[in-house]
Length: 32
Image 1: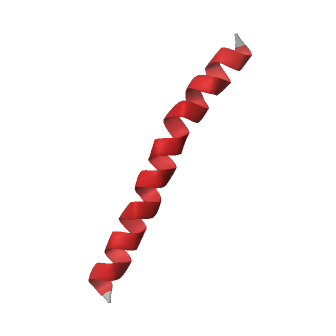
Image 2 (image 1 turned 90 degrees about the horizontal axis):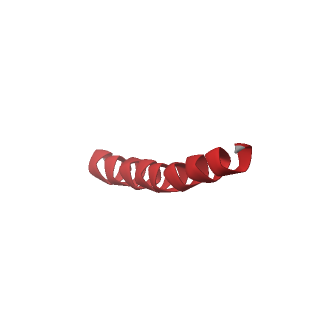
């Protein structure tokens, strides 16, 4: 059960981290 919850959390975390990085890059490009 713990493994299942952890796997689901990881699956949700990865796209969020990628989206956050892309957002920071876009904001940085706009600021420059």
